[in-house]
Image (cartoon, rainbow over all chains, first blue to last red; front, side, top):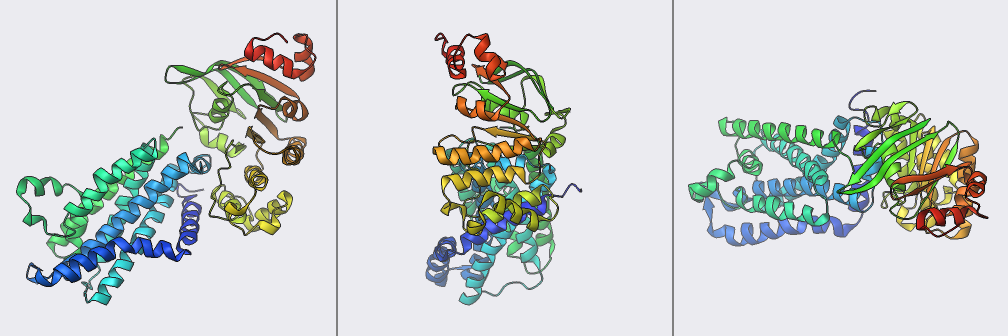
Amino acid sequence: MTPLSGAGPIFWREMQLYRAKLARPTFVVSALVTPLMYLVVFGLGLGRQVRIDGGDYLTFLVPGLMGMAAMHNAFTWVASGINIARFYHRTWQIIMLAPVSPLAVVAGTVAAGMARGLFAATLVGLVGLAAGWRPDPTGVIPLALLLETALFAALGLVIGLKTRSTEEHTTYTNFLITPMGFFCGTFFPLASLPSWLSAPLRLLPLTHANIALRQDGFNEAALTALGLLALFAALLLGWAGRMVSHYRE
Amino acid sequence: MIRVEAAVKRYGALPALDGIDLAIGAGEAFGLLGPNGAGKTTLVRLLATLASPDSGRLSVGGHDTVTAAAEVKRLIGVVFQENNLDRDLTPRQNLSFHARLHRVDAVEETVTAMLVRLGLTERADTPVNGLSGGMRRRLVIGRALLTQPRVLLLDEPTTGLDPAIRRDLWTLIRDIRDQGCTVILTTHYVEEAERLCGRVGIINRGKLVASGTPADLTARFGAERLEDVVVALTTGDPA
């Protein structure tokens, strides 16, 4: 028995639950409504009159929307899933009663959150491709999305275990995740903000995900952003592991 | 098999368990009776390693529930009051997940055999949302048995079920007991404890106020029925 024994079944369960949700057409449509709305309103509507860094707005917007979709889905699925499993269905107990290591719980749960975040980002990317966006082919985008979904899924695990009610969970979404989506460079470059506002925003992980997602190849800016994402991911995974190992009801 | 020594657990200022001592032998079926909020569920949660005592010590099979929680988890099966199932998944998927998580050998065969034992083969691939309350309860108990636990903790397993389903579950629990599994059963139903357990404990306001066989307790308190003893010890009304 290895420290990762148990991660596979946890991931398998989450994917079964996700598959059950995906079987409902309304679920996929509703997951796409928000990014599509932004794409149409800002990208196709406003975007025709706007140019950023010498390029068209669609080229700027699509990576940002992919980053936002990845963040929302990786975080929300894990955090709200654990919240519901702890307080409503009580199924979190089933995992906590199994003789598996905290590492296995973190690995299985975070991997499932990553899969969901990557799926959502891919859907947005496909819509962007259809609208005329041409991505960088070097592999920066997949790597950035892997790191981003890992760190936000780990954050979801931390928040899912920290909260003591559904209302508290909503507070984290309203005061942390939603503002990150709007202020961390999804819709406009941070350089257009005053320095007193852009400086603290550089401490937030979505900022660096958006920077990495918009680079052409593994240049210095991409490597710096990827390194910071890896650091965020390592810290949050460690925190998540600590939360799981100290979990008591 | 189970030892509880001076266990104290508080939630805020209120003691949910207030210095309980208890010893239960291997293969014994022990019933815990008491009103709501008496501390029955808290004791089950401590034994299941989901919560830690503020003071005192609990052990299962010689393993401390705090310092050797993983070993304890390998010995126990737990059924809580709620049907804590993944409702979008089928009974087969719920059982398969549990079997894989606990590294049960031959998962498919074990799960299929359990579905047969529970009488759920026809609904094996229907999402749990579509099952009746009795079927869900059987599924929860069957899931706890998948790992062939040496100790089964049953926290009010039949609360809210109709009499026919309750009797059906009694048969299942009796079979488990007769196979040598140590059973702790918390319940509001005195009749249930009398039928299934060799010994019962009466718990009130976090204290174990009496324990023994039903016959011992009725004789000791000069009562006609065990129910009279429970009422007397938990409300102060004479037996």
